[in-house]
Length: 129
Image (cartoon, rainbow, N blue to C red; front, side):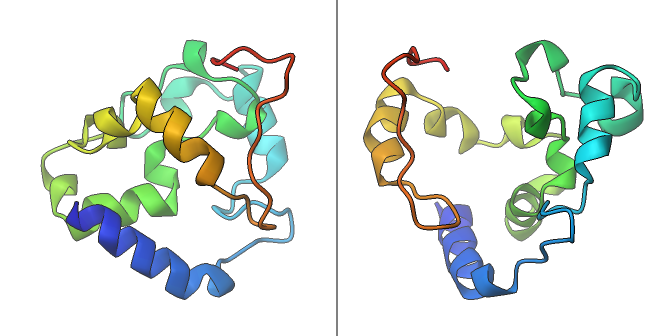
């Protein structure tokens, strides 16, 4: 889709310019804040601005962020204009297909982290971990 092409071009072009704060978070959310969200000291209604976040589905402190706090999600919704009609990246027309098991199993091995290392599932992990 056009959003994906824009995102890929923009992210490749600006990958060296990513604003990594001193705490190491590219979206500027300190780990201490993510931890406070995770343990409930900061309630969901105080940090979720898309109204779709569900803490029951989150695994690990790093996932306690709203799509409206994530630069790539905002870029996609802004570029294609969907930000005017949807409140959450999970409502985007391209989100569903990207979460299909076959897509993740085929594309996952091709993905790399910031250091260029491939993602791998540990032998002790199930497919959902």
